[in-house]
Image (tube, rainbow, N blue to C red; front, side, top):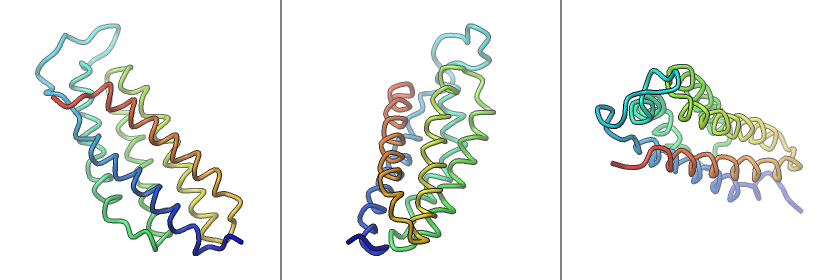
Length: 150
């Protein structure tokens, strides 16, 4: 039988996924290089990646410091990460980079809601939490591909 304490390893896996965000938000190329913005964009891809990196770096650092045994702090951190991703999406002037952020934000928002429910004893949300982790991983991979390390 699953209990609230048996989901802690799963929470740790989610947190490790989130920690990957810290490595990927540093994947911004030099904002001064690359082709000029096109198609109505006001930023090059490199500039947009830098905007996202700067906006999310603090949130990622906060996620790295999470205690897997403290689900309430994880919920708060995931909510803050989602809010910072929303702010970053509004600040980005490049559609291709901006389009990468909603799936990432949605993954963290869903993970936050699922963690909150699980912490309250609703273990039926474990599958949804696993789906959110997969969504976060997929979105991070897409971001890393669009914003490769220089």
